[in-house]
Length: 283
View 1 (cartoon, rainbow, N blue to C red):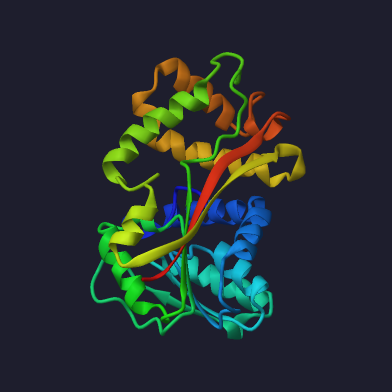
View 2: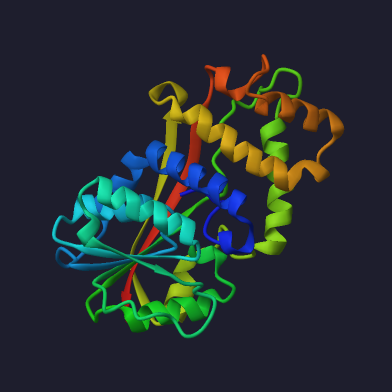
């Protein structure tokens, strides 16, 4: 998942819809990598009850349902809109009976009843928690004794442009990311954290950790252009005030879908990021 996730309750419905579109593009573009992560999980057996914490519109939920055909997934998110989309997709895919959705803000106590899952999956959601230590302890109390907790995080927002781009302002994307990162560091202090020590402190044993480098050429899917557009629009909304006027003008040129410099017309896009997964068990 991208880094823009999982607290749409802090924003309006319009933002919810924009975010849902990015989540769906993210799921489509990164589907192969998500499937490889679900296949890698060091499970003791096929899980029957799974909880997807911060499910968004269901990228993880559907990857897990595909991987474990006998499993049921409880998808938890703050956004009623995202969960409605998830239910619609589940019905369209014929797996509606295997999905339960729970709208909840996991920063508030007490947590809803999520059963006793064999697997808890949290992708790009734990770093949004106001008190991650408390959330991790809740997960430990929730899990079956031999259950597994998978924390998946991206190393920041994906990159899309080559370093020399755009021709008028080379390096623009890195400068925009640096500006957004400075602002996010204040608002989302746990982004990019090493979850290993935090898991250990919360009473888990980290079984395995894996980092995969994602590099998807733009030519592989027309969704890459739309994914870049949505992601850089989000970056602009955060970073514009900290960029030079020349950089903002160049960025707006990339985001203008009818203009000659539009991201949608570029042939040199790629999705570049890293994802790390920590697999942990109750100690």
